[in-house]
Length: 122
Image (cartoon, rainbow, N blue to C red; front, top):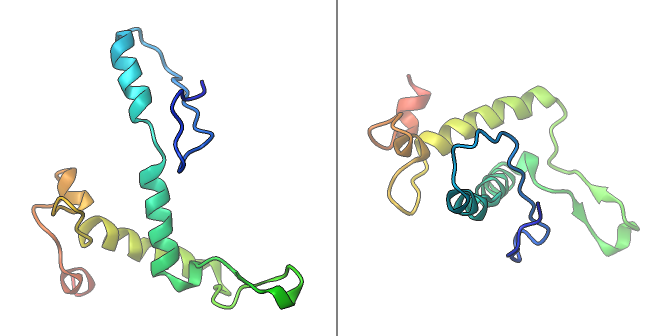
């Protein structure tokens, strides 16, 4: 179903309710449709691209006729897997959001922010 109020960050937003157990009234379903968003995922991907130079988008210039230069790209895909694992732990346990909590704290997996030293020297 096409979303009735798309915005600039999600211009072609569409939502699909796949499993209907008939346990939600139409008003509740409408609120759920309204809350559906890929904003958090886009924000996470942007942070991955910005903080891990190995995953940054390729660089293009006017002089290279449409070709892109992958100057910081990893030669071994295993390196990317390892770096994403480290970043995921950093993001979930060390990086504090606007509300002063990490994602792990919001889910009840941690009581407080975990320092990088505690993770590295565990």
